[in-house]
Image 1: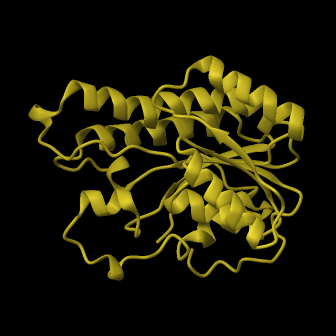
Image 2 (image 1 turned 135 degrees about the vertical axis):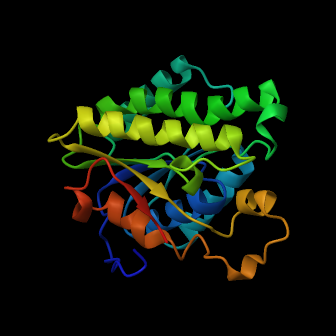
Length: 245
């Protein structure tokens, strides 16, 4: 997907929510979507990071974004319902949602996985994704062509030693994506997942501290697939996990 040609204003008049928008891939997706004409809604747990991205978006001359501070580790179903009501009132619809936020946890042998780490990873990577998707699907259905994008991983379709909680959570993510895609097949809503691959992010650095990050793709490098799945060019793509690299 590096070769996908991004067209200027291809996301014009679209409203797109991005989770984990304060850093890494989420930040770059927000900047890219906004540059292509979208109004972006920035969701994340750290207000300062969201405000920095907000300022960057305004500095590049894009439409004013919105900010939703929310910690997915502690958010409840009601939090997502209230968020959805606010989005409906302010924007009337959602054209796209990028569920980018994830938690790595710890890399450890399966027999040594701490229950608390397991629970926290599942809360952020599975339970929160379920709750936010369930809350936002009715709003996505109000758009002419809506795109719901989950974030997977190479360890989400082939388990890897020591990656227990994260790997299992990404298997669940792909399953959730496929269920939603199948239920809404032939509707105005398409649902897919992206495997970003080895990318120069803080999460990657924490998993591979000795790796030469200069050899990795940047978040900007992998944006073609993120734009493709959010644009109307992908309106007939549904139920797929696509590799950004």
